[in-house]
Length: 246
Length: 117
Image 1 (cartoon, rainbow over the protein chains, first blue to last red):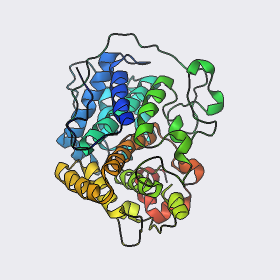
Image 2 (cartoon, each protein chain N blue to C red):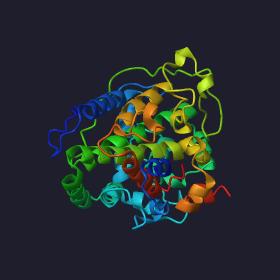
Image 3 (cartoon, rainbow over the protein chains, first blue to last red):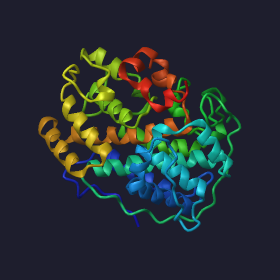
């Protein structure tokens, strides 16, 4: 059983950050919209495996993205398409393309499953990077909880400006649940909107690491212990090192 | 956002430092320490992280270390959502991420942009 604690860290960690980690691991272990708890924890495990593999570095250095073959060693818990998504997104996110994303959908992964998996990968990367940065080891993965995915399809989801379908703020309905902090929500906030629960789980955790949505465009203030330019310098350098153009 | 927040605070920033590494032309306080920690975290280099974290702690204290680590961590998720969902890069910062900024920062050399030309 996973227990979230920063007690072994040499640093005092603010309580909301500790709670965000607890909440995120709880979400990861619970059935989502398209994936069972077992598959979600398997995605988390594969995310860690991808990150540590020698082929992860090979993938980044290969002249052609995708030229490094990825074998599925999950013993049937995850499909080949899911394993491919996890390894490419973890190891070489800056060289993904729309044809590649469409090829994954063509391998039988639904768009909802794809989006939910991206949300899970991103959560695990944030959680594990934070513990690494604070000098801690990865937590043990949580035990998956028994439950049935909701298979909720938002009525307003459609192909918009991104490769995958999203919900424009004006197309969100009450049944989707809370989605956006404002009608002007940026595209990064809309990225996971095809699976509203994944969007909520992700941002509940990510906002505590960065800054809540209502403060993002207030460039003259910071609610953290470093100034906004200091935050954005970190953000820009980390993004650039990932070759992220966004 | 780096450009906007730095302009408001009155700090000079060399945007190309984002891609090429910090130079003397960027004047954000403790920028060198924050970038060193960020680079070590991305590289997952535990020794380098410990060194950079210790120096930052001496300079800014406990809470700044925690928040610097937290922000660096957050962008390990944001980049993957943006790049795997295929969010149009020109919409960053609600469209404020202008073409001239991308050019100046060296972002136009990234795969996502070169492969779409």
